[in-house]
Length: 239
Image 1 (cartoon, rainbow, N blue to C red):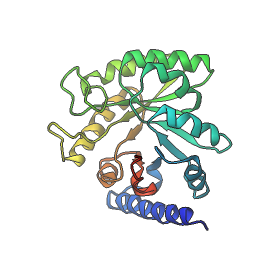
Image 2: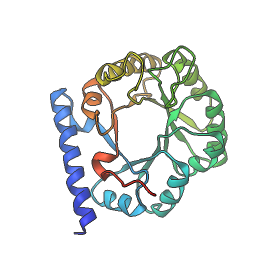
Image 3: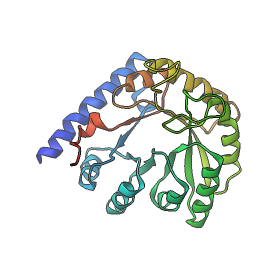
Image 4: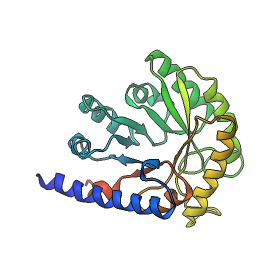
């Protein structure tokens, strides 16, 4: 076993133990939570090792990193998630490899994703990114739509050819009433999800929680957690 494989094996085991413990504490089955490993800045060779270790969901937040990596790993049966803020000029590339875009936050992006999905004859899963720190009608610094804008976006996705509404995503806010209150933030997301699912039962994905707060997300009811550093380690900054 290579040093890198041994490192990833140990890290992944620790994360799996954290998720399992959080599920047990919340009275949930481990199978209710999907681990999405965020492989940004890490090479395709790491993705291949993770696949050997059983990981099937990986995420990227920059198209310029993701596109070549997805091509290099095209022979693997992976579900690719795009989790970063997405500009419309990158949509065509992203829809060529992503299975799910977790960061849908405006109608203009829905229109662009639909056109690209149709052109590529693909069905693309979409999560609406909710900015819990946004004032009414505004987007937070990390992207996302204010809670009162979720219904409009959901309706736009429903009507868009080539797109499928999967559910909601959030990042724990750094400002506003939920700053430092991850559990409360994720519980608020679950409330919004409940309203969404009332009319759209299939939109049941809730992506929340990262390396530092995945337990709070699991406790609140998240179906997907996005973990990078805890699995892959801290990558030295270039330069």
